[in-house]
Length: 293
Image (cartoon, rainbow, N blue to C red):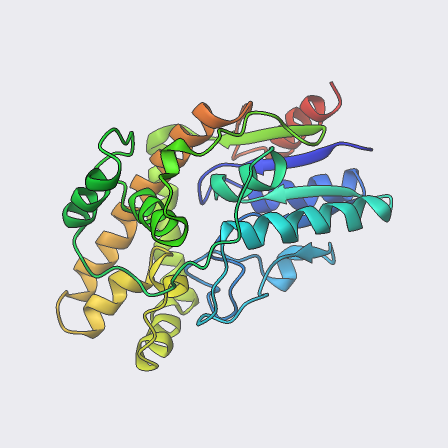
C-alpha cells in the first residue's frame, strides 16, 4: 500500500492499540508523532508505548534525544520524512501516531521551516506576561491568551528568526497520499478515562519518575512541556499538596485533550471514528474501511 496512515487524537483514546492492529494488517511500521516521546527517561507521564505493547512492530523516533538536548519542529520534519522514505523503500506502510499536531503537519504538508536555533531554557514568566510580550510583536495574533504552548512557540520563533509566526506561509498541501484517522469519545467518558489514566500512572511509578528528574535539578523544555512533571515538581518543592498536584495533572490533561480536538478539526482533513470501548474490533473495522476507500 502506497498510502501513509496517520492516527490522531488525545491521550487515553486508544491510538496505540489501533496503531498496532493496523500495522499488523497493512505491513506497517510506526512513527512517533508526540513531541515529548522523542526524549529518553520520559516514559510514564508521556504514556510512551511499552515494549510489550509494541508486539514486535518496529517503532521510530522514540527515545532519540536526551532530556537536556534540543529537538525542534524542524528536526522532526527532517527525521520523520526520512523515516517515511526508509519505510516505503522497504515496501512497508508508514503509520504516524500521536497528538502533536504541529509535528504531523510539518512532516506531511508543504510546511516550510527554517533551521531555528531555539533556546531550550523554559520561560519563567506567567502566561499573562508572555502574552503581553507576544502582543508587542504581533498585535493581531490569533493565539488565545491562555494557550501558553502556542504563545511560547510564537515567541521562540520570533527570537530565533526575527519574524512573526502568524505571517509565515500557511501549509495547506499534503505531500503524501495520507489517510487521517481521528479517534473520539464522548467528552465525559474521555475525561473519566483521563482521570483514571493519571491514577494508573501513579501506580506505574509516575511519582518516582518525576522525583528522579526533580533531584537532578533539570528544568529543560523537554521536562517542563509534558503534563505531569511540572505539576509534581510543585509538590516536591513544598508548594502544593500531592492531592492538589495530581488534580492539576488531571485538569491540565483534560484541557489539553479539548485543545487537541479543536486543533485537528480545524487544521486537517481527519475522518473521526467514535471508539467502541466494549468491542474495540469495531473501531478497527471502521478504521480499515476508511483506509480502503
